[in-house]
Image 1 (cartoon, rainbow, N blue to C red):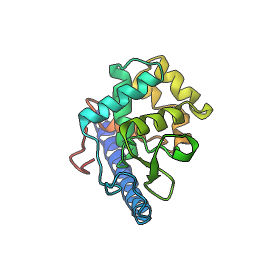
Image 2 (spheres, helix red, strand yellow; image 1 turned 45 degrees about the horizontal axis):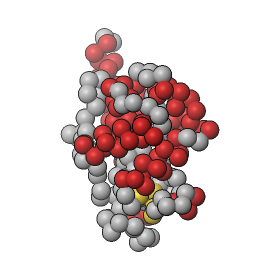
Image 3 (tube, rainbow, N blue to C red; image 1 turned 180 degrees about the horizontal axis):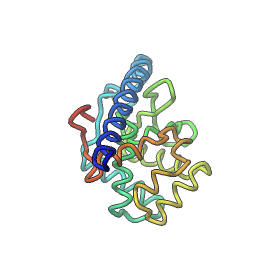
Length: 188
């Protein structure tokens, strides 16, 4: 096989894996949405950040981690969000940080796994930063600190702990140029 065929095949595999993950998330979201404990009045699973809001969110998370935004860091975060298939309110990486563990951070359950819908951008950023500051994500933080390429950051074993696994690598392979905000096939 030539390189182009291998890359095309990897892209198809990534898209199929993404579609399966979206289907599982949809089922899980249905369970979470049925609890009826939304904080914001938005329907769980129907709120999507605009591209500008998402990029501002990433910049704010990076800033609170003491990092400047860079093309590498932003591309990684865009691919990470796409790999997560995130639809929870103000939670592009599907963190499960519980509001009760962090006074002032208001969250409701998005799904049965415990992913949170956050009431405001400030709450979502705080939950994401607090999660990333846990000891489980030291390698991920170190790779971001070094401003490694998105492909190197995506190889962090910490993403398995997070639950994303190889999803970011698959998105970076499927979309070697710019990471799309919304994929034409799945609308995310």
